[in-house]
Picture (cartoon, one colour):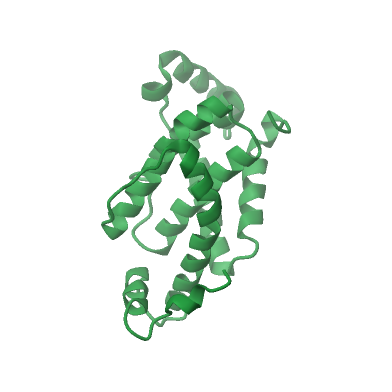
Length: 209
């Protein structure tokens, strides 16, 4: 395993990682990332783990929530359990309405996967097993917005693809959302439609990214 993190530092570690990831991005995107992180910790306060972890773990978490108050999930169950419940965070009622905030919701979850893998905070066997479930949930959430067919790669391949594509997809998303924020268009879908027309960005837009 990699560098250890004290149980009291779980939340700080996630917040610090996402803040660092958002630092090069626009203020509007940074604000959206921050809202996703707040929603994540709200989710962890109420998520019901009985169906996924069984009654004994659920009782343990209930005791820890009573004892610790807010923020009990990660100290009580650890990062591996966070990975296991992330698919629920990518479904109703936690997904925001369609638009920029929902897109950022998906991107932040993708970056959380990178965080867990890079820091070696989850046993590799658990990571491989759960990684594909989270990637499938991300794909399903994306498909709901754009009507794409969901294709989930094998976990090992998906990890490599994720490293390469997450930065590029965020850069593209930032540029698209900038058009909305400048009031050139009313929605992300409208921006995408406009840029697909003749005279849009074109292939040379992405040279050197």
